[in-house]
Image 1: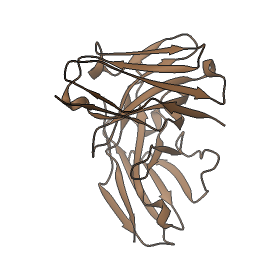
Image 2: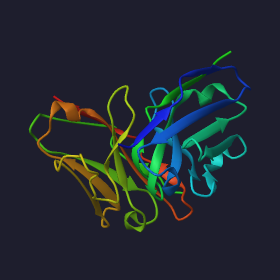
Image 3: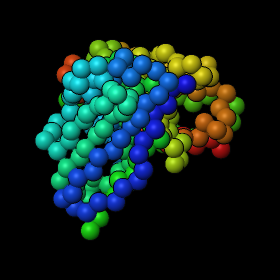
Image 4: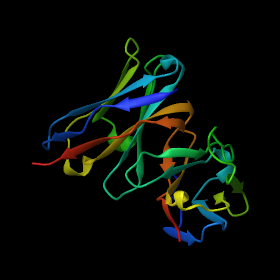
Length: 118
Length: 111
């Protein structure tokens, strides 16, 4: 069965970077893209960007351009999302999700809480 | 870019039918597919409708989706409400630049 398993919770100081992983199993990793979506405490969902696991092409939300990098390691079927220059308003649960088509997702990871605090 | 507007909350009794709307602010609702996600407290979202009206395997047929060009909106209808349907529901679409938009979410209370 398809599973996306994310790395554990992180606590970071303002200005630091965080890298969250999303390990896929149960399907051919390079046949689907991976999107990242985050949710601040008590807030709604915010799309961060997408990466093709086939060729590494990316598309980032304009708001995060320059601070976010998404990568994949096809040898381990793992996607990564790195966010730099962290601020307190980056505190959120970060989810990965499998793309079945443009901006359409079928399976989601369990989420990774990233807390940014001094 | 456009916005998707949902009611903040809806409530209905078990066994009844509820409809959650999602109105697109500009551009046609029919120009890009609409998806719906269910999120129970403390859990990750799950997809209940994709491509306007398609149900992923495992989602009961009590869940249905539609779009209405006259009101430029999409709707999620849940019939035969169960207490387990109590959750937040988000609609989502995108534009021609693959810019993804989420609605603000609707809290469904089944009382």
